[in-house]
Length: 120
Image (cartoon, rainbow, N blue to C red; front, side, top):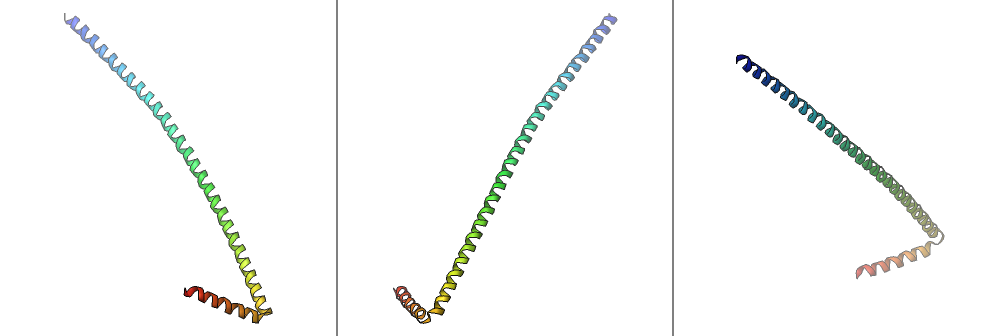
């Protein structure tokens, strides 16, 4: 009977070892599967972040270009207005040189009219 107990005990140890091996294999399979899924998810997230970054950089570049264009248009408008003002001022100076009496009369009339308007 002692041999029978030892055989049962040996058989039991074998089954325990086999069960342990199956658990180890199942755990390894689950870990490998989970690792693959995590890697795929991480790749998708990385791809999405890269895509979003590229879109944001493109939008920032377009905005910078628009600002540069608006700045240039503003500079051109300012330069044009300044040139027109300089031309107008030169015309007024020339008119005053050619017709000083009329220029003084116009200035007095404009001053009187402006004074009347501001008193009201």
